[in-house]
Length: 121
Image 1: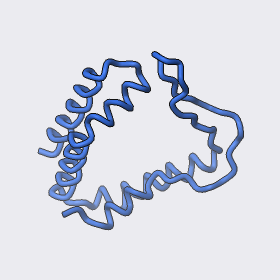
Image 2: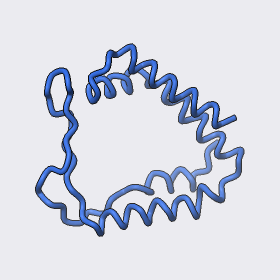
Image 3: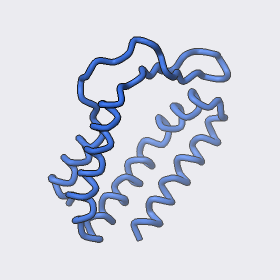
């Protein structure tokens, strides 16, 4: 069973505070096959970036670093399991963003899950 403290910390580790954003689009993901914009990402301020980096560092220092090997193994194994269960939808997202054939994207998701399983031991 996953430690609820670790799970909660990971959920909040990269949340950016609702500070003012610049209105310009800093980046957009475009489907290379259709030219359709998949998603737009706004610029963030230096303060938002600093907050996200500090929160991530705190999460690592105060939770992940303190997590036993057995708990880390469970987290990685669960992530691999979820990737395998959601392989089709993850592959579809990768295909939309990168223009790869769906079969290649499914293979990439399965490979990523296998790598997580390898690190899980």
